[in-house]
Image (cartoon, rainbow, N blue to C red; front, top):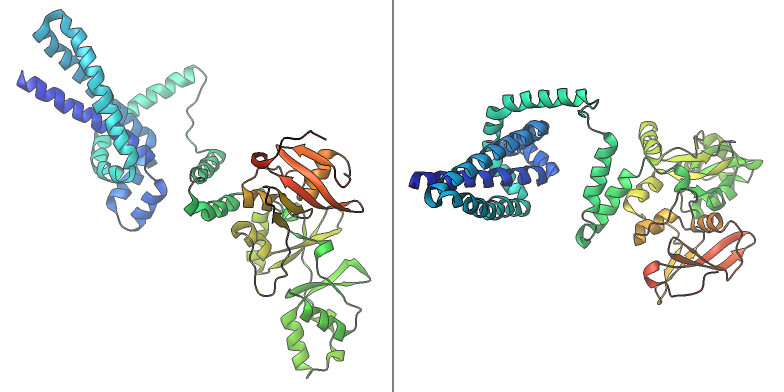
Length: 424
């Protein structure tokens, strides 16, 4: 009888091992394991090889778990019947249910969840041996299952869905949303994943706010404009602001002025300008970032489908989309968002929706409009008057200022601080 009890205990330990292994190997951090493998950790390498054939791994664990579970239950029932007769079946069922649930399922899985990475590294070598033994059996079972699926007109998916992988990556980033210490890193990672979904028109400097130079001005006036500007590259136009003939670089101008011994009137700015690079406004940030790298340029002119100049996009605009605003000693500070004591925000109409969403974790839609003013016009289907109030997406929008047909200032009250008021 002692041998039987010892065998049951051993089987229950095996059952707990398989339960904890399944949890640890599926919860452990894959990026961490890849990093450890590159650092030379052979146990992490074993873990990664196991996950390369995840179906065989999980099948082996399930096979071992099922065999041990059935064997342990059968042996416990046999011992109970020997000790208590027919009533032993009931006793064995009750005792095994509690023991298996608490000590072979909940306890090992809970431990594995809280120590997943360490447990996975410890388990990987032993599991590699077991998978090697059970592998042929699992392979045969998979062939049988696939044949059954074909009979019913279904097929087991073998290829990784790229969209699902991206969703998993986004989910992994959002898991840490409540952790303040990784807030900035999470925002940057999310912005990187969004590069292929954002167009240059969403981050460009609109033509109304772009600094350009008239090529027909006197060379001295052009040099003065360049020196007063915070930018190193400026579009050069002639006859019409839409007629961009080149892009002039401040360094090229300074070199030319020095070569002419300061005789600015002899300067030919148009000759020094490089050829303009025009891109469609539908170009995604990922495509444009790749193009910037290939051409080794930092500056492009954005045009719409009719070839009309829309604005300017630079490498810094794309980098700021990832890391946030990059300011230096030459930047002009523009206050676009001003928090108020009552929880609302006074926002310039030109502030982009993406910037607000990223800064305050809002979820205002940016598919139909790029700026707050554009969103208000699109949702209200009118040009609002000063003082009008609208409620969209749980937010309260109050028009504070309007210049002609352009909304220049809006008070936005987020849902959590919005007072109860009648809807306009």
